[in-house]
Length: 415
Image 1 (cartoon, rainbow, N blue to C red):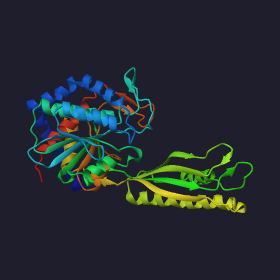
Image 2: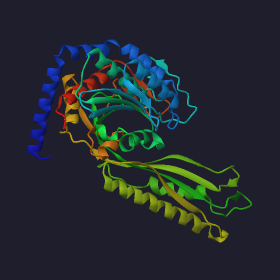
Image 3: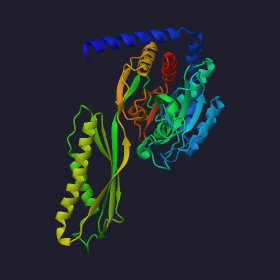
Image 4: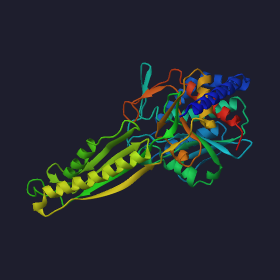
């Protein structure tokens, strides 16, 4: 970024902070922000209630019904569960142009996971308690605060509890919302609530490609048919190459074998083995490179196993299937939505930090629709693990930043 661009951005940021400080002087805004702090304990109890409703990806229906009822209780209109399973609730504005505020319903765990929340000192533990039950309760809290301040917005606000953000959900909820739903042409901007850090502004979407690699062979007895090629051995050869792959630290580029399964018995040569690979990069070119490296590793790994077991006359074959594609995207820091978020964080005493990650915002970003992801408040870590924890102290600051962002962005002239 050149000096002129930096100076321009600084001026815009200063203007944004000034606008938010003016908002903070309004009695209705002060009332709404105070409401969020005063009702923190009630919202925390609701967060726990949401977290204890199991919602693995593709199994979000029970939690969706709960959220739909909560949307109705807080006065959102035309509440529905759409064809994809997303929960929608509207707050009408002067214009049909719509700002979407969303949080995802699903958790990154298999069906049957114990979602009971437990408290140990200042921390609360539970799968999905922060990711994204915090986001879901923030949706409810923000809608309540808008009612408390009796705000009449220029833009229509659409609150969404969406499916399919985690794992192989492949952003199915927001893909449907922005590409197929009957409302798609009205959706002009998007805020996702995911994570907890209220100062973090995700304005860049990391590109993601996910593959399932399936290897098949003749199988047989581990002793009687020794010498035949094994799909599991071939998979090990592939993964060994992948594990040794060198990737650049900048732009950040990553790979991970997240799941593997195969075989029928310890004393049987497997007939089938599959594993799933997650590839990510902030740069589309680097993502293509590691994708090609993976596909090359599959070919050479299978060839090596077949060559080693050539005397048997049997072979292992591989099938590669793309099972997830999250497009990359960017909402510039000078975009009014980004500036509204940064100015709101500063006005509430925080230091905003722009980041790149993979969230529901990837999809609207890829369509050139302004989109950012903001934290729901509090502190958390160990997401996607059974030891996921959340610290609720001061967590009201997340909904406060998001509320102020919505109001500041809404004051920006409609295009």
